[in-house]
Image (cartoon, rainbow, N blue to C red):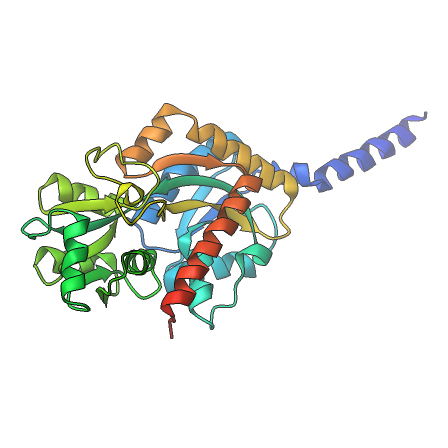
Length: 323
């Protein structure tokens, strides 16, 4: 083979490699990790724990961008509106699936518009009362609601939030009607709970933990399948009479846009799985109230499908609509 022909062959081979999905997955361009909530919040904190781990393992800079608004949908829409390349990914959870179910104006669809790459964490929601509340356990709170329907209040960060759905699920299972008090954010719920304006509230575990540690609230039950290591004496809902099998965990994970190179999604999957297996990352998540809970891309998609069925059942039964 002549030298000129050999050079041509090498050039063509190199062009083919650089055009391949694997090469694009190994691009050195920065990756933007979109988060739909403000800096300092629980979703932002969780994203910022995993971002540098992805960066280290892929050999690329990962920049967290807070695209806030519309219950995370601004960030999700930004992912979908962008190119199906390897430069933008999205950190999402419950809202990714549930918001389009409650708001007809939101037309995004996680099944067709995204590719779940890997689950990162799970956590619980906590049913809580102020420390001065007479209700020592969930049974007492339910009994009070049965005695005076629609007078015992619970606060949530908004209609259609995961906290709202858990409150409705508890009401349905217990056969009672609590008074739902929707707010425009979790901080307002906490403030009114501590002020005695609310009888109870559903909070994320990460929000409840410091308040419980300070003795400001009493945690009656948590929504995950397992007790929290930080609150070993607090039962899960599924342990309590009348609530057997009831679980509604919160979860988070990384998504790519539908059509992204398979090799890139696989690389994300591997990077996240490896990171979550390290004691340091697991501890940082635990300290923030999360459990490192890796699921591969396929397992993650199956998990979300199951959760979506649960959300739809609650939303339809309670007729939850966001205008």
